[in-house]
Length: 310
Image: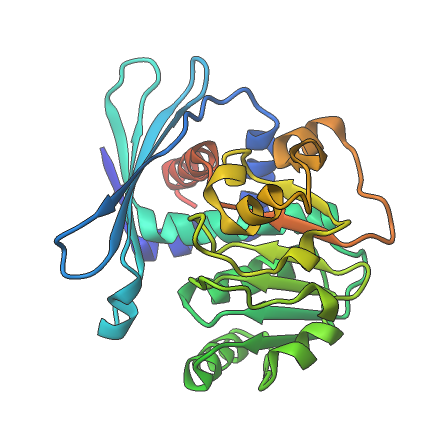
């Protein structure tokens, strides 16, 4: 069994290549049962344990074990940690242990990039990144892999953290400016990517352009929201998995109030398979909560890159 650590994942990954691997995965017949989620008590802080298995028919098997501890940021630690075990579909034997945190960071960014490739305006001017956590850097890179932007703006509750993200991206040749006011930044954005642990809506639909693409990553519980009902009203909505309709407050609440209907929400896999395109001009929303067959595709991609020595 090989070990692919955090640094090796970064050396092996090409966002473009991963996006294409995920495009194939979402069009495949992979089995991805509902993830098991456990709210942890007695850990000194609120925490969540996630178990995410997946397998391809007559193909690879994989499972990710992930934890979410929101208060880790106060300790200078990542809020999300994970490990991934890739197994042979023929023998069940372990093939690779992969650092799950880096796999998740790249997988999440690449899934958002894949959705943006299908949904975002063809020639967007401004990308707004809402959130200044570790994932924000990867999401900016992912969106930049499928669209060219005239400018990239980042907003975070903590200006110092937002400035640190901007410095990191500047060092990678991706100039970023800081937004002091979220509403002003959102009104000028063509694509908005949100990766926060917010429990109340940050982005308001009244601020958005008519053809804005909204990429919502952070909410994974019914009590968490990044966008208000107005963002969803009359939008073309796509999810990475239909489980998002029960798991994310961004969808649970507007569904309960009749703002949107279940039948009007498309899955990313269905969109890819049907080769459908959203009407233009139209606001589009992509809501991801994480789906296990995307993790499996990312793990197989990394395993193959490692195997051939790239």
